[in-house]
Length: 453
Ligand code: FAD
Image 1 (cartoon, rainbow, N blue to C red):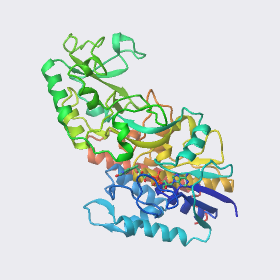
Image 2 (image 1 turned 135 degrees about the vertical axis):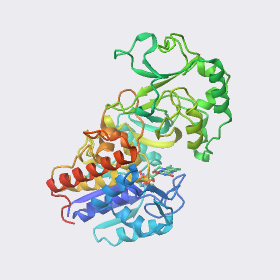
Image 3 (image 1 turned 90 degrees about the vertical axis):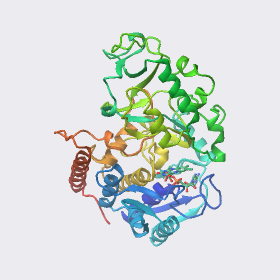
Image 4 (image 1 turned 180 degrees about the vertical axis):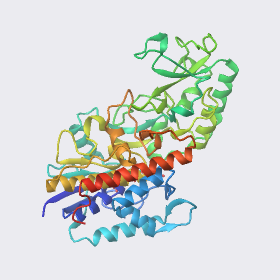
C-alpha cells in the first residue's frame, strides 16, 4: 500500500488522514502533542478546538452553512462528528469540544491503515506528505518550511485589516482616486473615505481610543507593541491603528489617513483626513481598509469604523486582528489543488495554507487528503468549481493578489455573481449556495469522486 505522511493532527490533518485512508492509502499521522505542547492547545486530543466551540451557522444562506453542505456532500468525517456531538445553539453548529475530538480520534484509530504517531516532525519529508501543522507550527518545522518557501513566503503574525463588501460602501460620500492622480487605473486605484470636517475626524479618533480591545494571550503580547524582526515578521510592517492614534490627535492624519493629494470631487476641497480602501480581489467585490490592523473587538470595529464617512452601512466580511499565525504566501507556493508548485510530493492545508476559521481548515484538509490520495494513485487532481465555497477559497488564496495577501475566511464575495442579480440578500446568498452545490455535484460525478470509499 502506498504511504502518505501527514504532519499535524489538528482540524485539517485529521480530516486529511480520514480522506486519504478511505481511498486506500496507508497514512502515518504525526501529532507532536502531548510530547511537545503548543501555546494554545490544552489537551493531547486530535482535532482539538482551541477557542469558540461554534463552527458557524448551518443556514444555507450563510457562508458557513454553504461550506458545511459541501463538506457533507464530500463525506467529511469532522462534520459528521460535529453533528453527532452537537449542543443547542440555535441555528449554529456548536459542539461539545471534548466529545467532538474524542469521536474524531476514535474514528481515526479505528482505521487499520492509519498509524497515529506522537512525535514532532522537524523537517519537510521528501516522501508524499501533507503539511497541516497549523498556526502554531513548531519552530523547527517552521525553519524547514521557511527554507522551502525561500524565506519571504512565510509569515508568523497575522496583522490583518478589515475587509468590506464593495456594494456596502456609500459612493455618494466616498470617491475613487489615487494620491496626486498617480494611479494605474483611470479614476484612481483606491476608494477614499473623506473626513471633511475636523470635528468628525476628532470624534472618530476619540472613539478609537476608548473602544474595547481584545485581550491578547501571553504568547501574543509582543504583537500589540508592533514588535518585528527577530523571529517575527509582519507582512505589512504595522502597528495597530489604535496604538498609532494614542500617540497624538494628528498621528493618523499625518500617517495612514493623510489627505495630501486626495482632493474630494464631491466638495472640491482637501479633506482633513482620508481612509483609503484598497481592492482585495480580482472581481473588485472586496476592499481592505489600508492601515487598519487592529485589536479592537469585532463589535467595536463595526461600531467605530462605521463612523468613517462612506462606511455608515459597511458590511465586514472579515474583521481586523493581530495574532500569532504561521502561514505561507500561497499564491507563490500552491496550486488551487493545494499541491506545492515546487514539489509535487507536498500538499499544504489548514491555517498554514492561508485560510482562516475552523470550517475552512477542515475543508482544505479534506481537499488535500483527497488530492494527495489521487496523486499517489495516479489520478488527476481536483480543482473545485469557482462557484463552490471551497473552490472559491482555494482560488482566492492561490491567485496573486493585487497588493496585499491576507488569510481569508469563507464569504460570499469570493463567489462569482449570479447571471441574474437578486436584490434580496438572503435570497441571493441562498441562490449562490444552491448553484455552487449543484456545480460541485456535477464536477465530482465527472471526476468519478468519491473513489474507493
Ligand atoms: P491546528 O488545529 O492547530 O492543528 C495543527 C496541529 O499540528 C496541532 O495539533 C499541533 O500540535 C500540530 N503540530 C504543530 N507543529 C507540529 C510538528 N512539527 N510536528 C507534529 N505536529 C505538529 N478559528 C475559528 O474559527 N474560531 C475561533 O474561535 C478560533 N480561535 C483561535 C484561537 C487561537 C488562540 C488560535 C491560535 C487560532 C484560532 N482559530 C479560530 C483559528 C483556526 O481555526 C484554528 O487554529 C484551527 O485549529 C486551525 O486548524 P489547523 O488544522 O490548521 O491547525
